[in-house]
Length: 224
Image (tube, rainbow, N blue to C red; front, side, top):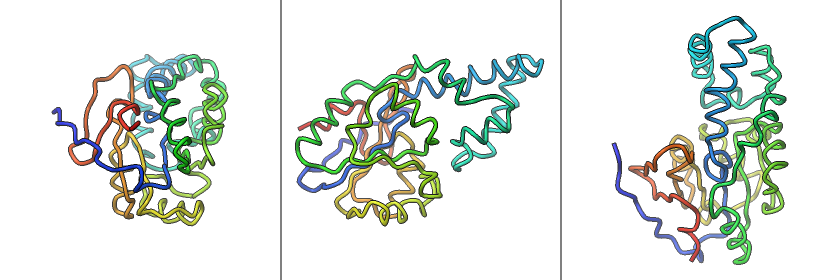
C-alpha cells in the first residue's frame, strides 16, 4: 500500500543537533540486502553442500530470531554462527557500498549552519570501519556512535536515554533521520523532538512513504 508523503515542516532554527542513521539513510541499503539475502546464503550453501534455496531459508530463520537486537548487527556473532569470515566477505563485495544522492551536499549544508551532527548506527564497529573506509564520510561528523557502545539497539527505547547522556544533547531540539519505522517509534516514545523517515533506503526498491512520520526521498529536500 502506498502512502501520501507527510512533508517535513520544521525550521532549522528549532534544531541544534542532528542524528543520522547510516545503512539505508546515508548509504544505499542495496549493499546490505544483497550481502545478507544473496551473497552470504550462496557462500553458506557452497560451504555446507546445500541448495541456494535451502541456505536462504535456513539463514532467514536465523536472522529473524535476533532481529532488532545487537546480535543481528554483530559480525563476530555471525562469523561464529555460520562458520564464515563475515568481515572478509564484506570486503569482497565492498564495491557495492554507495552513498545516496545529495547526502554529502546535506552534510556540508548542516555544518555550514552550525549544527551538531552525529552518525548513530546499529552497525557493528567492523562494518562501520569498512563503510567509512569506502565512503570517506567519517570526517563530516562530530562523533560516530555504534549501538554496541550504548549496549542497546536503536529499536529499544532504552537506547535513546543512554545516548542522550552519552552525547549531552537537548532532545527537544534534536532531529533524527532513519529509514526504519521501529527505530523512529522507539525515538518517538523517548520524546525525540523531530523525526524524519527516509523513504527510499535501497536504490533497487520503490519509494514508500511512512504513514506516520514526515518523509523524504533524498536529503536535498531538507536543504533550505
